[in-house]
Image (tube, rainbow, N blue to C red; front, side, top):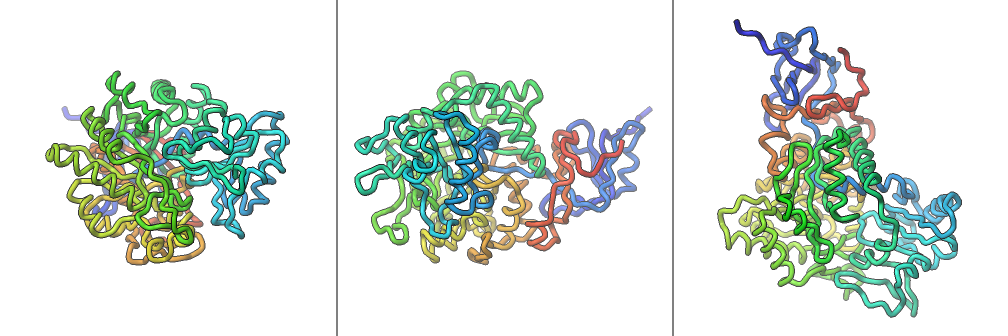
Length: 545
């Protein structure tokens, strides 16, 4: 006798988008941690048994779980305890100072006050905070305030003194210490930030595990079921690998993580990971080793992205070049030879050119290699560069949330001709380069709705249209957030679409993301339910058993 397969979970009476180009369904059935079937609600009813958990979607929109293809999960969790310096929380420098003073009032004298998220281009006067301002406002605490991009920190004199930074301290390789009128300004760009970071308290192993939990739960609330941790090892080296292992073992890992290993000279964890077999692809469907990340430049908004042409109003400033060619090429050759995919940071066109040359060398040496090397962010390219990337099999990994949050800053620092063409996602999509998207959290909020809004409108938070020719259709935007994100991790056969046999990661939203207005998506949408590995892990609907 043949017994029918009975589903463990059924979602019905909804509008279910299985993936790009697929017909919509009304219901989806899940068995274990895999999709069992999709179809009409009456068809799927045959798979419902006495123990099946049934959820009536009431017409809500469901789709594959979102994949944030570039963020910093541990930092996202840790920074939830720092002062919020974002434009929403502190729209002026005065508001930032007030928030820092409020935290200092509850912090013992001599202990650190830290903040993250400011963007000086949002301030009415457009000026950076300075050590002198911080000294006057918080004379009894070491203070560090990190810009939204994460590539610039402003420290007060107490923090600079703890780090041993004086006016005579030389700029470290790949870094810049701000000086003006014979004194330190407090600004630390790129690798110079490490001088202060190294004297700040290091989180414990348990702190890091708790950050993984907190950051992951935050993502789940937005319907994000997978992410890439973009610089594992940045905070405390191999302790982060241990934390992920323990979180996964003990059921404290809320989302799937593709962990990128920090490979920068002096802070690389690649060699230690390789020694114990942690190469690209090692792991399981919850925690897997991804590629190796090397920084080649900074950020455009911070004027540290490495450009072939200078920044507006600063004819001598081409940004920060982190590594000479020979050193970068040697690292890329060595890490790919060890079995790693490369997922290197490059924003300015000069940095991207350097990375593409490094990847072209790898392709020339081994034309048949299967690595999907990526350029993280990949902000400024032209047609010739896109063709070279295409020929070398290089994937752009941009964050369209940058358009919404920082687009106006890009125009301000680069001019309209360059600034408006930032992150040309439709060009990449039409070329078949499978661009993914994400938030780079905590650079931007992991909230996916500004990212989706930017992809389908190319509008900034101020309403500036950043080259309308780069607008995606809603379905193309959802593909970037799902299928293309999975492809960028080599996981398109197991996630990114809702098809029988694929992982049952599902997000349910209050609005139809295919037909709702861009403004409704941005302002009036929430995640109603998140299913990870076949389990309901976030629920605003009230699942029926």
